Length: 426
Ligand code: GLU
View: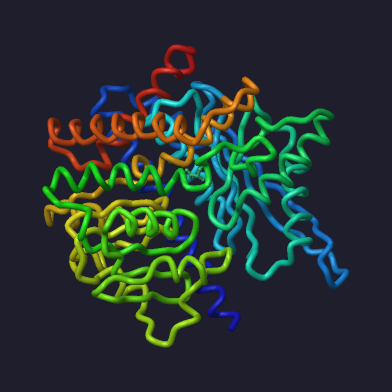
């Protein structure tokens, strides 16, 4: 058992190590192509600030459990840093660093006045009570309160965190700050200054770029066969949007297994039965594995779960023509290379999943001005931004003859590199 755990943690370390080092490699390539000197890479290869915190929480059985959490701030040359907080047992320091860098790229791609940030706590919220989660959320904010704030670093939801957790965090920060401060965090409930459309924003952004990618390949989304890996916030809303648009969702999955029906799954039924963590496959006997799911015969594959799903081991077997990354980091560098060589159209995470932070920005703007927009206004603004970002990156990839990931990194890194240069940092 001990040996297994040790092997697991080594594997985990290698895995997250890969995420950070592969991110650095692509950033280096992008900066070189843009003509920046090496010192710009030296600045951008790591977050400028990284805080590790220990959070004591009184558990329901009376004992105290101490959790480890992180907050990474990649670069604040453009503006305050921005990015979600994930609650997950596999969170590591390196993963949080890579995720913070990706947030800088997303902000650059959709042209927001932010740098990238990210937080994470090593915990399993599926095994914690509501009261324990509240204690952990409030404890985290107390621990990081000195380095965050509406003009410093603005957290948001990510894997296994939601609007209730944002509400507790906002309340805790407002108590520390001694006045109501909704702009400290985004992804809040509407009654606490949240924005219309924030909950479904990541999925909406993915849907917009997926439609554009389908057009490029002459594929009609109506009737297209789609596989969605993951049934959390992004995966569930996305399945619903595509199902309503007439696509056939032939496969979905959660952390425990996957469902497949070549005739199309009953998405409304599955949405109704899923729990708040996106678990639904436990209710079925006829499940397939996540590995089988990724290799299903389909037109479009959307990884919307966790990192490192498409690798050198399975990239040769992916049948979808279009892969749209709704999750952060689902395809490794080797996986990207193989898919590109096979002529697949891969829409990278830093573009595809940037709808979430875009509507978070709208939420923060509304909080700052104290005047709120309708859902239609949000939708229209998001649509315009996502289409522009897709076109810029697609055209860059075509004219430079590079894959869309490198093109997205080039577009994404330029703003933070320029801002750092103008400030005289490099
Ligand atoms: N966690 C989301 C992401 O990875 C959203 C971040 C935000 O809204 O600030 O893009």
